[in-house]
Image 1 (cartoon, rainbow, N blue to C red):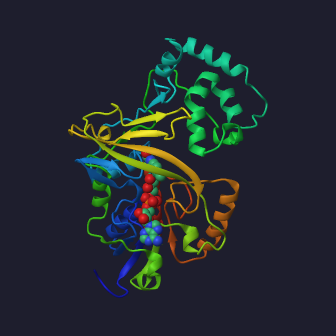
Image 2 (cartoon, protein in one colour):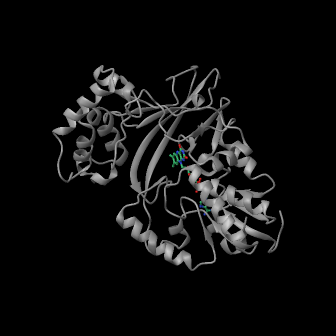
Length: 370
Ligand code: FAD
């Protein structure tokens, strides 16, 4: 590692934002020192090898985009496989395809044509039309009717938010896409897949030739670290950066329980959602299916939602009015700072992977030119 004020950039955080920023800066002749407080690169995309299976330790990550430029960009670092996300819902022991499509309608009502399916949805939702739905339950019932709502939405949503659907605001569900084709592909994007060999291949390749130090918390040695570079790129929590002076931003939490099973194939699909309220987890992932694995054993993960808090590992930002207006105060301050803030934690924003890659590419282009 170089010492002294030698680097152009100190990059805090080895997630996708930091990795793309570092790669793009290096391409333009700049030097970067990257640190991460975790013991691995990749941020939340990190995969841990267990029984030769790439386990998505921070939750299922499926790459999907409509942007050909971003698809070509990531494929230049690692080839992607042909994985298509087609989750299945388990409600009281019966299985239904997701997203809601003709397969789901067949499983619910034994209907075989779009006309029949539309007729049932119309009949069931007609009874619930109101001018202004007062809560999420009223909103969902008016959009899809009773069967889809009670079997596939209510329990799952209540578990996710830790609140009754009648206590949740209606704006959480703006639309509920219904597909009148036999198409189980969860995403509508043109490009989709998983990096062959897992996400560490992608971040590892982006970070080739970059000095990386792991297990280093920026806040423990801020002054010393900042002296090592001319400019800092910060991808951690913006409220923590400013010592929570305007308050703590909240995130929805998750707990992941990983289990190795002495079994070749547990559920035959990468993602199975549990949509009834009585089962405490929301989904079970079986990681080998992301990569069509043939290993002798399998690794599954039960995903449990946790109460929103500012103390937990930050997963999903809660962009309600209170948090958004708090974030704006931080942003105003950040706009006058010489630090570059980027990524999901610094921008307090849910970013999909392709979006965070696009944001980091745009930023480097903006400050360093094409
Ligand atoms: P991160 O990956 O969080 O990286 C930030 C890094 O900064 C972390 O490694 C952290 O340790 C480090 N850091 C923070 N503070 C400090 C500090 N003080 N000192 C040193 N290091 C620090 N996207 C998709 O496209 N498809 C999906 O299927 C998908 N599934 C998801 C599932 C879950 C459960 C979650 C939470 C997200 C999912 N995403 C998905 C989104 C994806 O994870 C993000 O787009 C991406 O990880 C954002 O990258 P980032 O660099 O902004 O943040």
